[in-house]
Amino acid sequence: MASEVRQRAKAQSASPIGPLGIEAALEAKANPTIQPRPKIFDEFALTDRVALVSGGNRGLGLEMAIALCEAGARVVYCFDLPKEPSEEFIASREYVSKLGNNSRLEYFSADVRDQALLWKKAEDIGNKEQRMDICIAAAGILTAHADCLEYPGEQFREVMDVNTTGVLFTAQAAGQQMARFGNGGSIILIASISGSVTNRDHAWVSYNSSKSAVLQMARSMACELGMKKIRVNSLSPGYIYIQMTAAYLDKQPHLLDKWSSLNPLGRIGRPDEFRGVVTWLASDASTFCTGSDIIVSGGHTSW
Image (cartoon, rainbow, N blue to C red; front, top):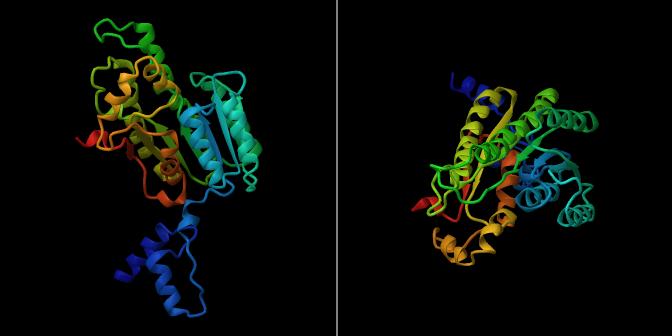
């Protein structure tokens, strides 16, 4: 009976690049002709995979897109609101073209609130590439301080439309193509520690609410899509210096010391410090991780 259960368990969750770890060691012991080789980096490789990234014109979205390309993705399609790509994107596209691994960055203009457009664009990508493997929903906005008792309805709806509804539409667009080709995939929704804790002295009721909704969206989608081999996780950054936060820091320099003091490391984060975790979530190194929120905050939520 134990042997039967073991065989069923192995068949149920066999690694595409197995055997790994102990299983590989036992196989090598039984067959001296096998030459062991490291496979850990094979697990993180994204060779030939196709990705869709919202908010990919600059900042965190673009940083993550470059990481996917360095890990071997065939192509990462980035989209954002501007009609033309930023200087950062153009430089990044050129950089990726020189990596020597045949990876490429592509850009198109789209509003995350346009469900029909996103679905059509993702379908076009699927038709061209014949697969869809990774989705990073990183587009988001942060508006000025406003008292929660007097918060303008139009402004609240705008933030929710971009940060929550737009995330859903992005995940839908990519997820439809993942399901279409049947290879599974990884959907990564960019949330925030603001979805789990309140930002001290900052009146951001719309932003905080929108990111909290993203956390539940990831859990809900993970439960629905698991049987299709589509994993859905959220990633919650702490305070980092990107264009969105620069709008506050550059005008109020004292906030740098304040934000830095809110975590045990005593500093704010860099966008490149998310390269490793997003590559892990996108790759076969995290195949048993779904419905989780990965917090990368310098320990902000630890105390």
